[in-house]
Structures are given as C-alpha cells and as structure tokens.
Image (tube, rainbow, N blue to C red):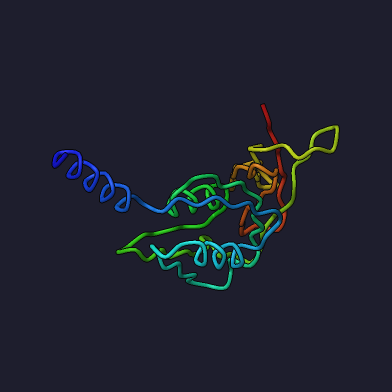
Length: 157
C-alpha cells in the first residue's frame, strides 16, 4: 500500500509539472488579438509584442493540444515574424519592416484557398529573385519587399 501511495504521488507530481496544452481556433483574426487570447488561455508565458507592425498579419489556424511555444510556431511559421523565448517571456516582432508588402490569398481554379503555396517575387527588369514565402494553411501570404515593380510567381503541388 505504501508503494502504491508513493507511486500515486509521483504520478500526480509528474502530471502537474507538464506544460499547459491549449486548444483554440482562429479564423481571420489579427495577430495582436491572437496574442491577447493566447495570453488569457494560459498562465505559463508572458507574450510581448515588440512593434506595431503585427497588426497587418491575419491568422487562420486550428491549434489543438499544443503548448504555447508550439502554438506560436504554428501561428507565425508562414509570416516574416520572429519569436524569441527567454525565461517564460515570448518576444514577438515583425522582420523586414519595408514600406512595400505584397499580400493576398492564393486560390485555385475552384476559388478554394491553396494552403502552403509558394510565392516568389522577381525583379521586373532583370528577373532576379527578390523574396519568397509560403502561404499559410488558409492560402494567405505577406511578402515584404523593397521594390515597387515586381513579377509574382505562385507554385503549388
């Protein structure tokens, strides 16, 4: 009986030491609102937005049973955003803060968004590659660039 009690207490301690897992769905939600909701859903991390450029990013994601770092990775994976975790503080900032940003949704012939399509920007004068990005799972892309005149190529397998 004593061994059973010790094993039970050990199991309870292990369960309480595990990271919090969250499940939430976002549909066309601005990134600052997503960060606020993630902050409210957990008490393990403090999420800090470093600049105001995050307002432009629209998130559509199903987060199921993930820790906050895993959720942040899923949310920001297809955008020029950096997340740095230091001592339970998550710093979120937009990268490449150029004036021009090409954004949109890649859809197929049936008008259904194409998830994970590749977007490549080329210089209109000499066709050199400038930037590339992948679309989110909702087909949305944001590609920052310094050039006004570009050619855009979309590829999807």
